[in-house]
Length: 236
Image (cartoon, rainbow, N blue to C red; front, side, top):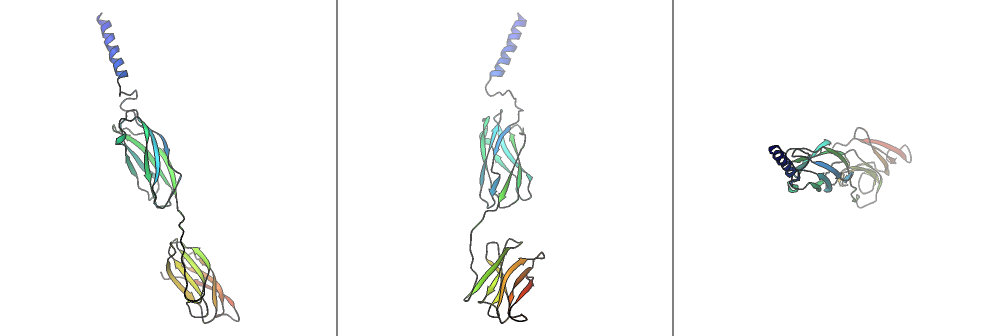
């Protein structure tokens, strides 16, 4: 009789433990799980925040935070998202925002941490910032005729412009070289020529940072018009 009562008591204790609400079959030590990460593979590199979402499953209902560690990138900072408002919730999703002005590809290592210190298996995701095209226009010239014939983006993301000017210089028309900042504002300019007609047609940036110019000249010709090649190394 005593043995039967003992077995019945044990059975009732086990039965109550199994059916008591809030006690998970995974136990207090079960780590959270990341079910999905939704974030674009490309974002604009103009600093505009881009939203992503993460799905989770947590049998303990005790999420603490999401840790976004940097797995690959030199100029991107790690960050965290507070998930304490999701305590008591065993399944769901949360949002996060990322912005950058760098064009470097970034790989992040995402981990979820709960109140007990359990960490989810990490999930890697990668995105690439894309430089957005910005439209603008600039005008260069004076009171007389001025022509632009050649333009090239320079190694500092500015632009080098080359053409001819009747507004500035020493003669009828001169070579006119203009260097701009990335947004097209003038950084410096220089004219080349003599007392006659000199016209610049082509410019290229050289490997040493200088510029190679090509045009036609009457000021320095052996007769009529000759072409003129100039290598120019700016002081700034």
